[in-house]
Each structure stands twice: as structure tokens, then as C-alpha cells.
Image 1 (cartoon, rainbow, N blue to C red):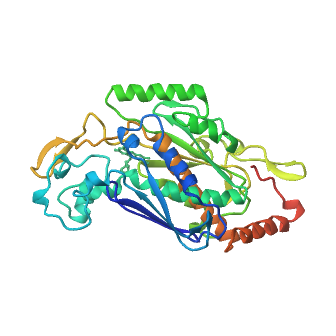
Image 2 (cartoon, rainbow, N blue to C red; image 1 turned 135 degrees about the horizontal axis):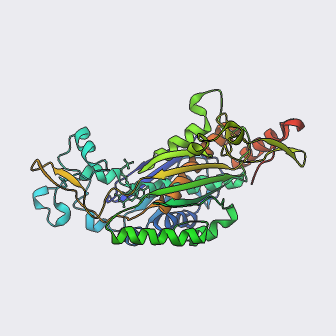
Image 3 (tube, rainbow, N blue to C red; image 1 turned 90 degrees about the vertical axis):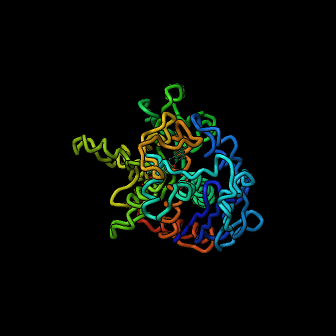
Length: 396
Ligand SMILES: Cc1cc2nc3c(=O)[nH]c(=O)nc-3n(C[C@H](O)[C@H](O)[C@H](O)COP(=O)(O)O)c2cc1C
């Protein structure tokens, strides 16, 4: 239903993104998108580059007077440092013998944990610049902007998406669930932790890793409130909501594991302690727990959708890792670029965007609509048509 595509390199002139399939009438403003981009840049443990990178976003198609028009929406995020990179990343041919300065050095010492080496093998590049420019997580700025657009659509349907940090390195315990109204507090927390004691311990952990010349990973959680039941499918493997969410989260750079609901933890329990029993609350069917993370049989069940994503530690370790210099064929140490110590809070913002895009796609598959008003009507009539004995509580 929804299609989206990003283009552009980390130090290219701009990132471009196109979102197709969004109904007309969705509020979309440059200001709202800029707020989302700022949330991605923010987060304790991010490197100097984040302070330099002032995203300059422009909406270039599909929106008029603050509302989507039903056609493809296009955005660009300009590289504010383009003048410094114009020769290195020029799309037009350049005489490479005339290039000077550190940036002109061919990158022949591929970084372990990155796309560098295999990308060179795959595309036949003699250095890793063309690989790392696209593999870099700078691309996620475009995904966050698109996520922000669809979040606005979901909000029109009463669906809200929240992210928080569950663990950084060995500091974990983020089991309290923030509500949509807690977003302001989360935005102010340096690591997007909901529990302030946890937040302080996480900041200290990042400081220690920084002192030790090392990096950290962690786990983020995304929660979806107000999700109507029956979105997704049990009849086709590729329409299952859990599968789609897992794929979307795993597509984020450095995400190496996904859990839906209690995930791996539930594999350690007995069946009697692993599922969500039903009861009647105010005449509606409701769950006593939400261990399944709001998804059963590949469909939303009206509870809070809860997914976690595990991020590996940043691969660009300041104490450079061993590699091979492909120019000399000798053992060496990896190139070191300006890099984050920990990008877990930022990864949470990207995860929120990918979850929002996936949920919006599945919502449109079920309810359709060329305008938001039409989607709303379809949703309302579906909920109304559910027989009284099958009506269930939607947690919002
Ligand atoms: C928001 C975000 C920021 C990142 N920042 C860095 C960084 O500063 N340095 C780094 O080496 N990797 C960073 N990464 C991870 C790399 O992009 C990623 O590990 C690399 O592209 C290889 O992909 P893979 O880990 O999925 O195999 C970041 C990832 C995300 C999601």
C-alpha cells in the first residue's frame, strides 16, 4: 500500500526520500519533520558530527498548505557541509589526481563490522569510500522524516507510537512502559530512558566506554497505542504483522535482534505463564497481560504493540580494530572516522519511524482510503460491525 525509497550518500549534496500511497488530508509540515530529525540527532554518546549536522529539510512534492494531496510526497535533506565535500563526492567526473587533503586519501583499510570490505568485493571498488557513503546510518535521517509523516496519519486514526531505551551495554531494566503523554519527558532525557535512575546509570556507562576508547550497543523498545484489532494477517506468511515489523527493524543499520512482546524471554517460561488470558472489562474482552506484545497470529489484537530491537556496539571503535590494507596487502588497523560512542537513543527514533511506516502500511491494507476522512470512516464502520460478543478493548 505504502511504498518508500531513500537515495543519497552520507556526504553527498542531499538525501532524498519519496513516500507513495499516503491518503490526502494528512497534516505534514516542515516544522514537524524538523522536530523528528532533531530527535534523531540527539542522544548522549553521539559524536561531534551530530552537532555539525544541522539537517536542512525541504518538502518538495505532494504537500500543499500543510496537507498531503494524495500523490507521492518527496523530501530532501541538504548536507550543510556540502561545500567541504563537493570535490570528493561530486556526481560529475573529476580528475582525482588534482584532489588534495585528508579526505582525498583512498580508504583502503576497511573497517570490521561495516559494509566496507564486502561492499568492495561485491561492486569491485578499489577503496571503501563508495561503500561507506551509502551504508552509513546518515540514510536513516530520511527514514525518520518519512516516519514522522506517517505518524501524523496514524494520529488521525487515534494510533500513537512511542520509543524508549531499555538498555545500554550492561545497564538494563527499562521495563516500565511510557505512555504517549510521556513523550515530552523522553525527549528531554539524554538517553531516552523512561526511568531517571536508569538514565543516570546509562550516561555513566557511556562516559566509561568513552574513557576506555570503546563503544556500546543496547536495546530499544517501540510501543504502539490505539491499534485496532485485526491489522496484519494469519492467512499469508508475508502479511503477518510480526514478520513485517521484524523485517523493518532488522533493516536498520546495526540492529541484530528483534523481539515481539516478551520474545526470547517467553521461550524460557511454561505455557501457563507465557500467554495473555482474557477477561471481561466493562463488557469488552480484554487481556490480563500483554506478553504477546499486542500481536497474535500475525494480527494486532488491540493491546499495546510492543517490539524491541537490539543494537550491536558501534563498529568504529576508537582503539582501531585490526584489518588488512588492501592497497599493500599487509595487516593494519582500520580507518577511523568521526563516530558515535553509543547511538542507541538515536536508533530508537529510527526504530519508531520504521514501526510507524510498517503499521501505516498494514493499516492502509486493511482500511484503505484516498483521503484520511475515508480511512477514518472505514475504520469506524469496521469497529462498529464487530458483533457485541467479539468486541474487545483497544489500549490507547
Ligand atoms: C542511528 C545510528 C547511528 C550510527 N552511528 C554509527 C557511527 O557513528 N559509527 C559507526 O561505526 N556505526 C554507526 N552506526 C552503525 C553502522 O551504520 C552499521 O553498523 C554499519 O553500517 C554496518 O551495518 P550492520 O551493523 O547492520 O552490519 C549507526 C547506526 C545507527 C542506526
